[in-house]
Image (cartoon, rainbow, N blue to C red; front, side):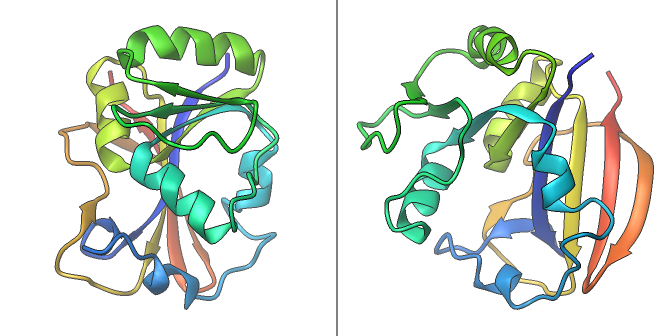
Length: 174
């Protein structure tokens, strides 16, 4: 059965971006693109995406306005944003209603909650999040966007090292 997964990277103190939405801390780290819990193996199993407005804007800015995913994507927002690709749907709908559409679009593949942590938490609060896969970087920021600002019970399924990162895959305990 397809899963809904939150795949991300975090600092050791639990932030996915600094206070200015920067990920500079992330791109200074070494990783093996074919190593444990790699992005390439993860994205191969994804059929649909969800992200918040800040993540969407970050992707557009860092990809020079080009949309890097060839998958349907729902962007949760209450703001008007540019639509960079015909596969993008802006929505202010409740996550449970959108999740049904995402699962249908993904078919037998998984759904990726790209970011942020608040959005992943909304899915978790409604029992719709199945896994959290996280790369933990050896750096602290002291403040920023939290990894998952909701209480979520997890069970460790896999733990590995990939370059500079500790990598972990957790099942959400419902």
